[in-house]
Length: 285
Image (cartoon, rainbow, N blue to C red; front, side, top):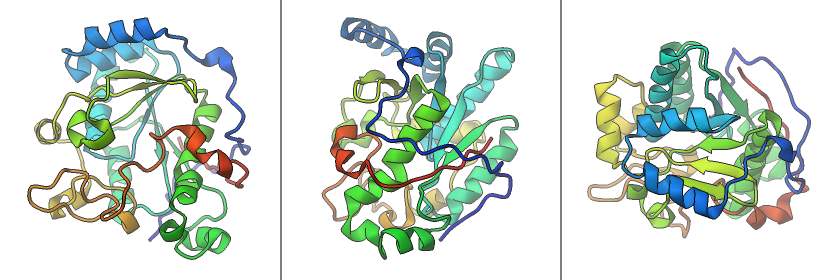
């Protein structure tokens, strides 16, 4: 599977070595006590109010999304907040195109562009090939099966760090929620990624899948067609299956593997051994 969006600008940034930290003059410094205080204040707030606060509080704020339900709800809220004050700085999106997304996901990106005009989507891809076939010619046939950590680094971890460096990201909105379980079961709304120097915000952390889906339905937000076929969490096609009755919403990700995250929410140091891999990017606005 593969997809090449025809509206790409063709802009390419230089390679970023993940072992080198980004310039610090755009980053935010928060003490642990301050983060604890902010989390207590935001715990009972509606996600829309959390997002309003974050737009004011954090410079260089972006949303990282794979266009799952939570990310889509966040995006819809941000779009409406932006209309309240059009002169304020908008929150652009960062989308990591692994080259292994479902065609339904790429179709959703096109529908999002149409539904939310003016929303900027910065697309970052792995180097080593413009298609999945070319990527495997570089790193090995189906290397996602026998080199999982390397795969995560090549298609997710390094491109995300490059996005942070290129866009000078100081704070990033994520779609993680506590009801997704596993390592996400106790996530705060606000946290500091000490290794990357980035403030990570989980505005819908307290919401359940049902609450998110209700928001999507009530606000006519476009969503991935795979959700109507039994999928609840959609990642790459080779590691995502429909969820069975009574299973957790992320049970369809990496089925049968001892794995719950794709890499971008793990510690960056886990992938230090892959930092010499060659990777490039395209940037879409």
